[in-house]
Amino acid sequence: MLALELYRSMSRYVAARALGERAPGLIAGPLAPLRLVDREEPRPPAEGWARVATRLSGICGSDLAALSGRSSFYFSPLVSMPFVPGHEVVGELMDDCGDLPSRTRVVLEPVLSCAARGLEPCGSCQTGATGRCDRVTVGHVAPGLQTGYCADTGGGWGATFVAHRSQLHPVPDSMPDRRAVLVEPLACSIHAVLRGRPGAGDSVLVVGAGTVGLLAVLARREFTEAGRVVVVAKHRRQAELARAFGATESVTPGEAVPALRRATRAHLLDPERGPAYLLGGVDVAFDCVGSKPSLDLALRTTRAGGRVVLTGMPEAGADLAPVWFRELELVGSYAAGTEITERGVASTFDLAIDLAGEAPLDGVVGAVYPLSRWREALDHALAAGRLGTVKVAFDPRSN
Ligand SMILES: [Zn+2]
Image (cartoon, rainbow, N blue to C red):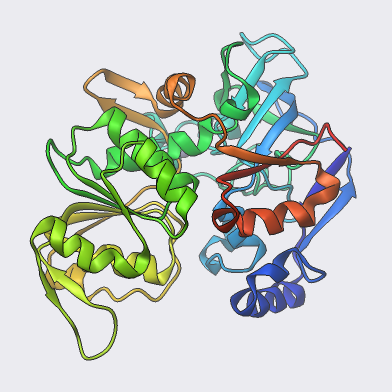
């Protein structure tokens, strides 16, 4: 079967890292640690696993970070090479899997936690917090924090992959693939909003209006009674969508600090070096980018005692002085799991499937490519905001 494969080659990896920082467009070029290969289909490693044929698989910011060598070396023991990326997936079962018959259309919950690995549940898995699983390097399959980072499972950027029953959620027939492929990022955004848990009337800042930022704005409207929501968007189309999804106001990164000062009646200070900051500010901020400037902006515009949620995979280098001086709560939000909402206890994915069925998501998947055009697809994904596209996806069935 055809698949895109990320293979470790340290010299290329480091070269890509150096180049990636200078010229992001080059990650789809000849130095990319990715190649299109004809691979053997992955086989179910144990009972409870089944083969899935990919219908659509999204390109995520974390995929682009891995490809450009921007992700932290912290993750290196949590992946196994070579792997087929792709953790945002809608596919079709090729085998019966427990109660799900062959041909069922499913979305993938990518975390490879204790259940998938054939292990007794760790403390986190026992409580349903599968994203916090401690055993993502042992058991039935090779190390891999998720499908799409594991050498044994395949991933969505290939024609087929294998998944455990615990990772599969059937989707309603009425839900088009282009919505279903957004369920995973929507689940991550719902999880982030519930980790930030803004209270009634709280002011909220969302830094970044890519997929996760926009879906966080949507989840904020669905799951909280927060008040004013300011979104930092670089591009016009992102700003339009943010307002359609419930943002009160959208600002460019350059306008953000003064706009937040006005919105929250805060006091603006200009340090000798580095960006301006506020005394006062928003109650809860979500960094949905994960760059040094995006995290600096969130930390510098959140009020004392407020909360900053790390939703994008964070880059090193942000200045933590405001965390100390403003006694900020810095909260991580990774993947999804089980949520407690006013409606009770629910799997984040079930909440996401419900929301994906009714939310105004038409057009969010703006481009679909065959695997053979992966360089174009990655270039498009890297420039998505500027080009007015939110999500770029692969369809391995097309050519
Ligand atoms: Zn576990």
